[in-house]
Length: 227
Image (tube, rainbow, N blue to C red):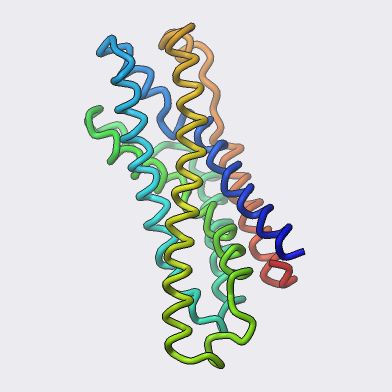
């Protein structure tokens, strides 16, 4: 059962990446516009790489603090509950406040890495991964716990959680970049920016609701102890 749960959590990491990649708010239209503006496909690849770098950094910045805390296994449930509440609060905030941060519009188009980092942070993209990441860590915790295995074991556990945080962030970002790249190439090849302006789809409401759902799932799993 633990193996099945762990597999499901890793698929959740991948699917959340695909979901972020499909969302135009994470930047794939900027990659299309860069390629059309410079009239070369290599500009799209460069833009996608910068967007991926910024998104990855935003994921790591959120997950690393949780990895530092999670080695305190005796407080496992409290940490996971706190993460769930935080994700729900972010989703509720985005439901109430639908306006995009003005600072995103003030960033120069050449600084796509910075834009991607701030966009992912402002939308709570990293927070969506937190309950999933903590669930993965929960399945990797030794059965005896830190209090019974000593300081060396605690350090080893924290190191393992840090590596897991990077792996989760990398897997998620790869899925996001692949999904966004597929849409960007498709739009660039057959439609162009006029298509984007006429058929823009807004996922803000779905995004906010998904944060609340993920946060609620994190709280449920912490209470049930299934993860």
